[in-house]
Image (cartoon, rainbow, N blue to C red):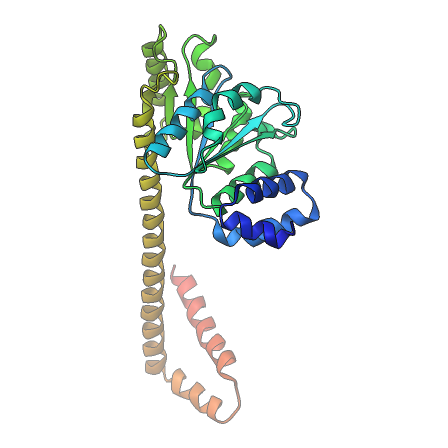
Length: 320
């Protein structure tokens, strides 16, 4: 297939084209840039969700249940699972692939595992490109699962709009496993395997860590409990993610409104300044004087304005 044919297939949601496009992105050939450039105008519609947290917290199982819940709601879903080992040799993702086998046959779901390629947090450029490809392919939801390698997981913030940090009781070193950077990037905390002993303690530990953060934020990260094996708590997680997306949309609208208000204020200030300066110059007679010089071609309008404002600015500076 040519790049143009692949792009056309991706935009049509063709699974073979999507798979081929991601492979090209992974290989990072000169064709990859052409491919990404062609699909880029069609991106920006999906809700991109990053799921991170320590190994053993049950991220993959939780993702499987989330995909099912989204499908129940009629959403199409893309999954990019970053694998610490080579995707060509199976490795750690094999177990996940078996669990997600049924989902892989669903036309509304596209699952891809990718190698970390030694990037911090496993977020290689190809991972970001894979997200763009799935976005352009029309997936409503894109879930990006990181390798669970500790603090370097904060790289996920460069890819996802909503970050879910997953923890589970009984992992050893408890809350220490998700402190520092991860605590700061989380939009939603999940204590998975909530049927285990000490789940409530894990929730309280996270609450205590959040209270130490004195930084005021408009979004307060909720702490949810889930049991991925049974699906308990997954629908509540989806609801919170939808709530967070609406928050982001409102926040974006707020920023646009702020920019519009700033533009109006700047325009109003400019108008006031111009009126005040012109009135004063007319009273001093300098305005008419310079108008005559412009008419007589003794000075150009730009130089005349500079001469007028230079004097006013010096006066304003002295009075400041």
